Image (cartoon, rainbow, N blue to C red; front, top):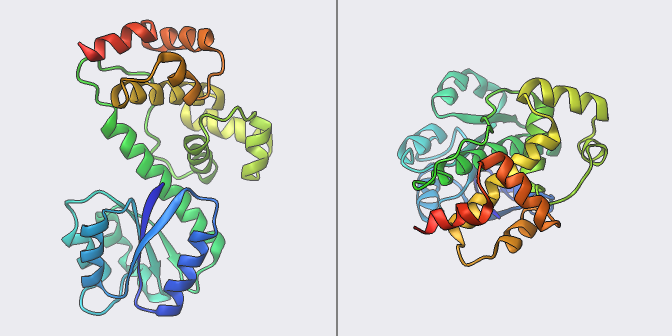
Length: 254
């Protein structure tokens, strides 16, 4: 569950956002609220959230000053902006802001920004946490740097539901796209089909289980990442990694 912090000086807006997040289907938890930039800095330092939703023009310190004071921490930034805030877009690029959500805030725009933020944070974590020193592996999962909403929503969905055996028809229905459009856009942008990407992502998660929880049996790892057939998992693992899962696990423990 990803931790979220809300920094907003208008009490009613802050409470409305919190309610939107807590009643959403995202795997997130609001771990704190702040009403100015100084409190925001303290909260970010204390809670180390994955995502921060913040106003820019606040008492004591602005949103950008808050970002500057917490550059040593990694988190995704969503700006809650008034009409006159869009001239700050260039400054926002410097701090890698995910998106501007214009006030008055609409729930669907907030959720769209959250989907992108969740994907970016998860992708950053994957990149940081899969640096296996004893056996570095390139499984061909490139980071997506584009802005195609369809692809971003699909990636966010796959990362949250990678162990589910949903068909492309079911995924496209969940995301609100036609099956043919989703298939085409994803393949064009990612160079892989949805099923190919999901399979490689499952293997990436299996590598993480081996690294972080070495006590788990191979069949337990296979089941955790969505493979009900242990033998099939072994065949896929060997095809992608180049060695059996048990051999790879042993290498990590040497």
